[in-house]
Image (cartoon, rainbow, N blue to C red; front, side, top):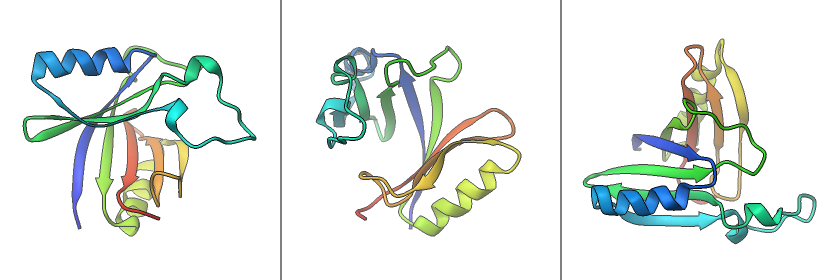
Length: 141
């Protein structure tokens, strides 16, 4: 089982520009990049046109480390200070649940831990100190 702590940068529509900047400035290598428009369709929630080219998720490698990126969804709150989160990435769903349950104590759940199309267990919380965490479980579900 692995556990990694990865800085996660949330941008307001300019994640692709930031990725290109870090490619040049930090010699970063893009490992993965997907826009909201490239994600699966959900007929119950049609994707607004202005969201289609925004980055849903990207991972870049800088040296031996990773940075992750996404854009906010159009209309979602974004302010300086909450654009950097910490992604706890693990290969064990039980470990993800343990981290999630511990971090949400006296904190705020921003997304319940749940199965998604990209993770068997994903959720996000703001802990009691105001630190934003994403809990990501690697692997297929």
